[in-house]
Image (cartoon, rainbow, N blue to C red):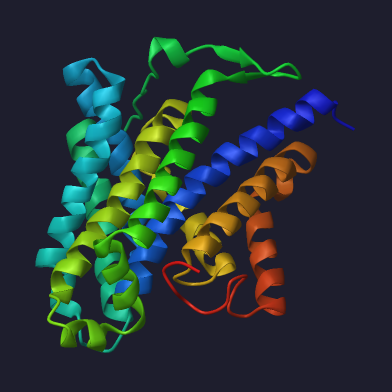
Length: 293
């Protein structure tokens, strides 16, 4: 039986992993909830966030510039993807077309990164102020991981107020439930889709730059993450942001604690949890799809 300090450290580690899942799953849920697009390129965009972070850190020497700039750069890539590629597939009635397109885009992005930055992974160093550990009284925990927790919580609070208290947020929520009514009110839904896709992909980029100092940057880093993020979305309920948050934290703890107690089962435990949840609630923990419940 592990010591209490070891158990608590693993719980905090699971919390950090869960928050990375949350950022990715919220981006997926935003895009699916409004546009019914399954964005399989999300993992590649997560990877791109880490590489853009390496690029900006190398050219500016500032991690803070990289932290702000990398998500914006990934969000710009998302805007281009939606405007010139994915938008052409709207109205076809089949969700398979966007899925196949984004799957192909993910392969292009991965191979493009290998051409530009090489096949060998790169390191992304956190700022010196966050390089040590913080004594929490009951254990010492890496300062950077505590910083990550604070950043993601702040982003979630900001996103909650953006979607719930601003005009654009209200339009996004309304568009996810009744797009015909939104169009009837004279609102350009195409611009709303563009904003949502850019925001969703920027969250993937933020997850990538935040994960970079812990995992490094390598071309295949998004492959496992996107699969596990889809598990989070399914467990939480397709299109539900609240479900993405709860399921992300749940899956993070499952992975963290399983790694501590039964390491051989860590990779498959997330799928076992998904299977159990779907047997009990086929629509996921938070049922019907929606942007915010």
